[in-house]
Image (cartoon, rainbow, N blue to C red; front, top):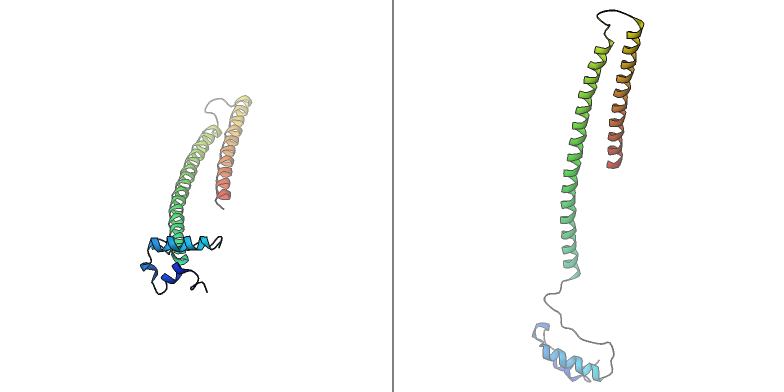
Length: 152
């Protein structure tokens, strides 16, 4: 179509892209500019440019690498949290056992004298230990429940 009218374009006929020089491209674009063809510029394909498939492949590889790295980090954080919860549960169980021992010691009848006033003191201490145990167990259970909920 433009072959006869644009001399710089006619000069490129039959050449491979790799054979076209920068000077020839400059001459072609200069000639196009003299013809009042606004917005038309010819660019030579660059070996550094990538095809859409190559770009997609590079992006996919980068995303996969990033996701794999994040999954590894999340697994580490998850394991740390689970280990901390297990340690807390072990400490709670030990504390419960300790408090049960204290409660058992308080429940023993006094060795000497058996008046009503001593029995009331022992009973109120038992109630205090039981309430303390229940409060600690409820707090630990709430913490575990929050962790399990946030994990989902």
